[in-house]
Length: 311
Image (cartoon, rainbow, N blue to C red; front, side, top):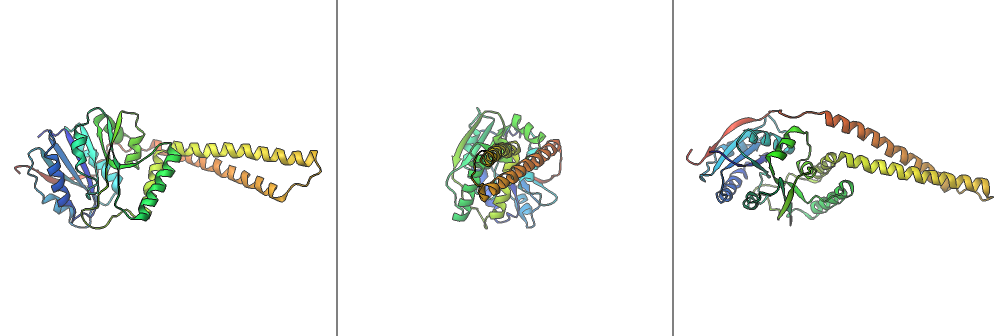
C-alpha cells in the first residue's frame, strides 16, 4: 500500500476509547477514495492503550494502521510532532492531526480529503459539550488571543496540511500546533464541525490545562506580544511626559497647588512604563533564544506495530 493521506492521532490513557475510536475512524476512511495511513501515537500511556490499539485489526482495504510509542508521557504537542515525523517517512502527501478521544468528529475527514486547493485546512469548532465554566474560560482565551494576535482562533489541532507546510512544521520548534499553523502564509480554508463528547471517561482538559494551552498559543505569537508591551511603553511614556509638563507648568506659571494624586499618578505611570520596557526586553531575549532552538529530526518514537486489511 502507498498511502497518500495520513491521519495522526495522539492518545494518552485512552484504553476505553481507542478501539471505538479506531473502528469509527476506519468506517469513515473506507469512504475516502485513496489509501490512508492511520498513525496512532501512544504518548507513554500508563494503562493498556497501546495493547488495545495493537489488538485492533482493520478490515477496510484502503486503511493501514501503525502504532508508535513514545518513551514517556511527553505531552500532546510533542506527540503530534513525533507522529508527523513518522508520517513524513511514508508516501503520504497530506497529513491530518486529530484528537484520539473521539471529540474531533471523524466525519469531517471525507470533506477534508476532497479539498485540494489549500495547504492548510482547519476544522473549526462549532457547538461544544463542555461545562459552562470551561466554555466561559475558552471564550476568554479566544478574546485575549484576538487582542494580542489580531486574529480569531476558533479551531484546535484538528487540521490538514500538505507536504510543503509539513516541512515548516518539522523544521521549526512549536509549542502550540494550531497557533503555529495559523501563522503560515499559505492558502488556507476552514470547515466547521461540532465538538463531540469523549468516547470514554472524562475530559483531561481542566482550567489549569486550558490556561497552559492559552499561554502556549501566545508563545507562538511572541513577536505580537512584544509589540503590545512596546506600544504600551510608548503610550505610557507619552502620558508620563505630558503629566510632567503639566505639573511643571502649574508649578511655574500659576499659584495653584499641585494635587497629591497628580504626583502619585505620574509615579505610577513611570513604574508601569519601566515594567512594560522590562517585559519587552526580557521577551526579546527569550524570543531570540527560542529562534535558536533546533528540533528537526529529533526521533524519539518507537514503531510498535499495526495492521492492514488481510493481516
